[in-house]
Image 1 (cartoon, rainbow, N blue to C red):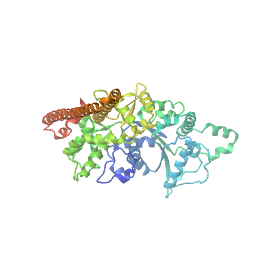
Image 2: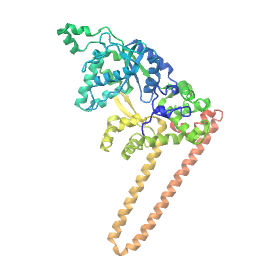
Image 3: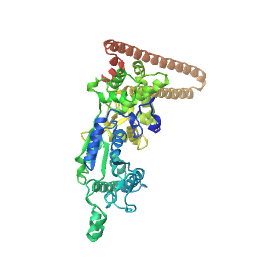
Image 4: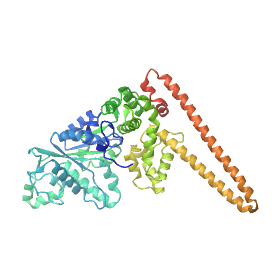
Length: 499
């Protein structure tokens, strides 16, 4: 799945981004999170450090880029996006951050004193030079806002070896001094021997802000930093799933003229597993994916609107296409591990310890970043339960697609095993009775033909059973819900995953 430019992929005819994050450029299509954006903005304005956390798939990056940043940019803030590169050849994190600040500052304005920054100085020193403030073209002071999205990488990518761990520790110390607004120990030591050095800094300054965003399952590792960074416990906002009302706005407002309210409500209930709007908890990433796939089908069929029958006819293919795209560039072993370990025999979602899944991936010799890739694609998610990180499929609605893929794969594996056994028997018989080679070949051709017939028969029987079962259940469900066409549009698919 290649990354694409969200701004180039969204317009009035394509108002939903799928699993991509919204940005400042696409913010007019981002709806349903006004309350959270307002609360986050108030928290950022009140204190130096703000922590935003939530489960994977709830849209933290979209809230930051398409919600918070446009609002605060208009209130005198200079947003600075920071994604630390923990590679061996990368500069120290503090240097990366200072470069990011410098680049953002050049786009927004300029510092009142040029050339006072010194290579190798700490973040605290960089932002505390006396009388060196950032101003826009009109001379208005701007407040740098450092945004550390996906901060959990300091607990993952940065811990790959001893060098990475040492670098991460230095970064934490540097960041802690900044958010606690305390001069670094090295500076304090210099000041003891050089009184004039103190004149270069304004120790009372606090005209900057820091925002850390991370997945909720990394909140415990973040807590381990509170000895040096007490502020991480004082100003937090937990992001929850969308409510039914919020989700309805996320469908209707960007899709004006493309989807009626009745259909939008049916889509929300579908994503919420059949729950009514008043009780719905909706993952924005999955909602956006469903809307994007439905809209693609609408465009392909030349329709003016997404209708109930389009939703009913597309629900299985939407998820199947998503699943196949997630695994399209992955080794076959990844599909096998997911289908065999993250789904029960009867087709329900299973969760396993992260270390167990990583061990399976390692044993299959798949790339070490496979789990991270699948989490970012929203196929898998990680949750911490009783201090154990566990992995599962993102949503129950994926179970049917995953089980169907597993059934097909296992049937193919069984067929291949049978063919190998027959081939071995053929060679054995030919070797043992060379004088009966012709007769043996004729008999084996009969066996092959019989095996093919049995395979076709099993396939037809299975397809017939599934069709009959689906027709009976779907007809019954529609009959019970004729008074509520919104619920009826969900069809058998919802009920199958609520069972």
